[in-house]
Amino acid sequence: MIGMKNSFAFIVGLIAIGIVMGVVLTTSFDLDKKSVAGTQTTKVFTDAAELDVLDDQSVTVSSFNPNMMFVDIVKKVRPSIVSIYTAKNVRIDQSPFFFWFRNMPRDQDHSFEQRQDGLGSGIIISEDGYILTNNHVIEDVDELRVKLIDNREFDAKVIGRDPATEVALIKIEAKGLPVAVLGNSDEVQIGEWVMAIGSPLHLTSTVTAGIVSALSRNINIIRDGDTGGIENFIQTDAAINPGNSGGALLNLKGHVIGINTAIATRTNYYMGYGFAVPINIAKSVVKDLMEYGEVRRGYLGVYIEAMDPVKARGVKLDKPRGVLVINVIAKSAADKAGIKEGDVILSVNGQEVNQPNELQARVAIQNPGDKVDLEVWRYGKKMQVTATLQGRDGESSVAASKKEEKKESIRNVGLTIQNLTAEQARNLELKAGVLVMNVDRGSVASRAGLNRGDVIFEINNNEIKSVNDFYSKIGEMNTGEVVSLKVRRKQNNNLFDRLIFMEIHAN
Image 1: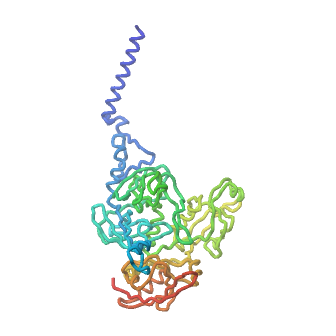
Image 2: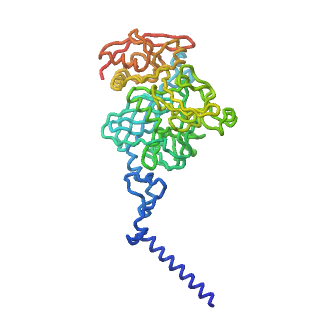
Image 3: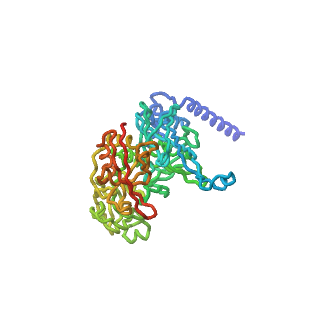
């Protein structure tokens, strides 16, 4: 009996404690102001600033609501994410047998033109209408239209694009637009929360959430002529589908840390993982496109391979790390800096590189003429090496800004062009020239007969050395003036030149 009484008293005591705890919890820890609990701020994460999206106030136990973690970010950023609608007219071949049964002549054209529509996303980065997106969203299209979250629509023009990084810049004529904040992708960590905003499957302004699943992914999807692509993707499990391309990957500060670009799939739809171009790479591309009208990418001039245990033992490293140099191009930036075959590049400007694509990405955000500090391992010794990067053509000087001149030239002419690589020039038996990447439909360049794949190597009998040189010469022309362009193509292993006359129009 005594035991039963003691047990009963013990149970009553537990109930009383529970009631007290319940009262405390239901008052949201609103204790006397003199108590420690009443004045102490509790951090939810170690870096609480990750949650301070709209202000600098600390997150407390009483104010933190996990259901609202993403809401304020979405309200702030969603208006700066746009839908991009594209259209392209393609010619479809049709079986001639269809026409034979209709008693039509055999020599008639058995093809027809069909419109292909596309959808992507974009990120507004300036109040006056500059929009960041993916190259594949706007490449080789006949129509380009942007729709804002408030349902306003604008025709857009391509300012420039970079197939090597899958980054493109377009512009609409508008003012006072909401602008996304571009963050720092070098600070991104595996495991942190992220959101994707875009227009997947025609579902405009869709928000999904996940975490950063991996960093520095190379999935071998970017092809840029002979040079290949620069892939250093952020991997996420936030749902990404067709239409998300060009949209934003955001951190919990509401900063854009990546441009959603690709998915890992066997069905063409989301299967668990998506990939985003780090925003630091995109910022470098955009800066060049806006200032120079082209991407001025720095090159080190080395052939490299990933390390493995055998290679590490061969160069006397404790474990596989860094990137192995297997060849140095003569007279390149690396050669002039003293880098040799067998060297292992451990870091660039103090940031470790352990995969070839990481080294490529670190160098690619620099311009010709920039200096990079390299930590190099050479058979048992660490060395500090400073290299002055060169351009693809071997030049290391940075050209003066042609921003206004180029924008005028692009409006007048309607071309997207890039410098010839040394290999392309040799293949065409040219010293230099510019490769036509895109011709705007209805432009003076289109009417003059220029086509994608043409190489312009002379203007008015003067050699064209680079994109800047082309724009400089075009910029000197007056409205109404006719220029002659010497153009070369390679067809069936034969070189074919032709002369084109083009009239310069007013803006």
